[in-house]
Image (cartoon, rainbow, N blue to C red):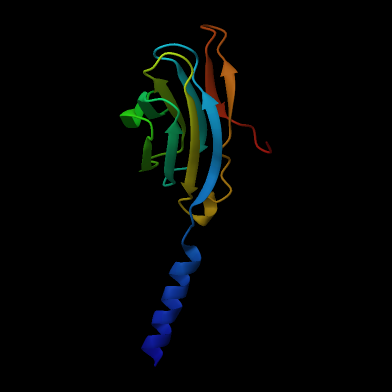
Length: 149
């Protein structure tokens, strides 16, 4: 009986600390006009987070690139209207999801990003980013958002 109670206690402890996946964000974005038009969204994740993205494009995408800042490719999907991938964060970092069209005109992409926090300590991790323009080259880059946003 003691062994059974010890087993139940361990099982309850594991269940309590298990993190659940939740939908972090969903939305609809459009590429700029023309062949090779692109659009991107970005989020800040904690080390150990399991991240999943599922997208549906109105036209075929040449590719969806997923990369950590500054330019480490995490995943890619090619020549599809329904890209998706799942990965575990190796470190705290900003991740950019870039959609690149291979058709002329505008491509509309609906996406859902899900996150399974690495631990209870990262449950409330700030995943938002701000886009800051670099005065040197004029391009916007994502940076972790200030707390409280």
